[in-house]
Length: 375
Ligand SMILES: *Cc1c(COP(=O)(O)O)cnc(C)c1O
Image (tube, rainbow, N blue to C red; front, side, top):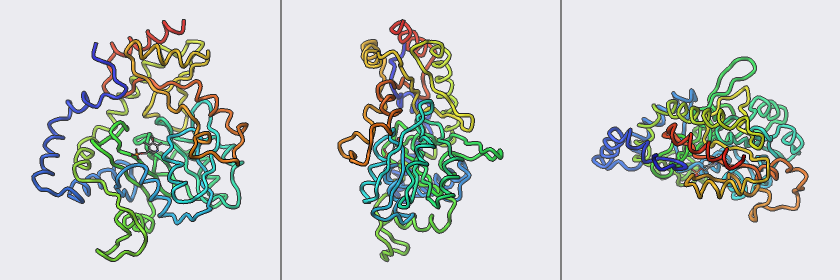
């Protein structure tokens, strides 16, 4: 059996080596390392794929979130609501900009922001909501957008984990994850569903004026060379990463299908076990399985984690600490009773190997090892 990896980037690369190598060589031959043609080509390919008016490439998914918040003009003291159960980048940039993070609990079945908790958290100071499409399926965007409209709030979708997922509104309209709010952000970190071979990220919006602001902000606040109209940052997607992404974007739907097939295998094998809760997919979204995350309900999650490692099955706890309990983000405003679900999830979740190259032999070994351990 091929060695099982959490993410197998090498096997994926071998299948696209020809096209990727030629593209990277072309960047080397032209030395157009920054702002070369591949950056513009990838940007326009991604705009078409997502059916969004503007893609603004940048250096990583954390910058994308920060620049989106800067572009919307959020000011120190403004409250920004996001989920307690997510990667720290989301709350980190809120803190960096001296905005006030307001963390709220998530739903036990989808791990996405809890709509009632979100409603309860709104105050006169609330300016924005950051739904995170965690592990690859969309948060309840129809509800989020309705609440935002009612209270005149911005919606910034953190789409680092769900690029390629589709959301269906109750009127039948289908949109891509990341294109429903005022602005969406993503990451092209190598292990993300559309990953480059270094760091990369992008911001999406359908708002022409905001797009213009953002394009300057990623480049030192310059709209004309050496004229700095606003305080910006230096956050660029380089040409080599853009070349890799241009080669991989046409394969993204295929990659999502491969992840879904692996997830279906896992769920078929594990769904009936009394100590296991397999992922639930909301009716309004497709799932692109950035992570395949089980809940282990018999109190043996940590033992299972170690047992799988002993059996050479990599696995991970995403996330082991809720954001409200992280040293950097603790705040006396928070009350443990408001985080019942997150506090439970951190003891139950375990993410299994998930990537585009898992084969049946590996999946069979992984699921059999889990069932043997739990029985
Ligand atoms: C990966 C990730 C980010 C940050 O992306 P980087 O490119 O690593 O900066 C932000 N939010 C979420 C939910 C992520 O998973």
